[in-house]
Image (cartoon, rainbow, N blue to C red):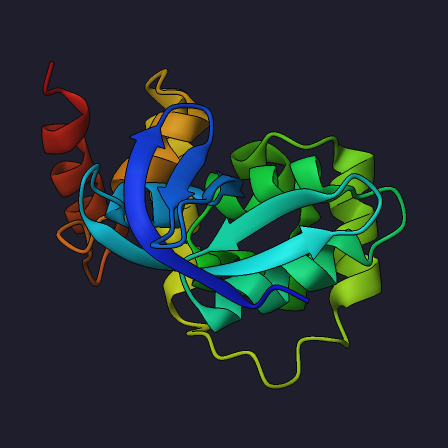
Length: 187
């Protein structure tokens, strides 16, 4: 079983390509968090999961993200592409908070999955999140910010990218929205 791959980042298109010192390059379907941290030409260690049905290699930023991916693909009807879409749609802590707080509508709206899939994720994973760390308090503030930004016409993909930035943190949704708008308005 492949646990991690260390090497030099060759490309960051639809996939992350990492070349190892042994002359082998790996094509990895990576989470958005991992893709943002990768720089072409620099070394990188990627936590991996080989999906058995398709032999596709998935890469993650950290162990928690990998565990959440594994939980998501354990939900009936959720494949690896949908699980990656959920991971890319919202910050990690907010996904966990939405599941624990039965907010399937938040998952559907922010992650771009159907309401039926979001409901299934909440129902099947609610009791399985033991051992995963997250902050419950951030969810309502972040959800308000996401709703406001979507109301202004921004795409959930752009919102998720901006809200995952460490510089876009705040105690109120107003603080988060102001910081996010500064980044979203850049060309």
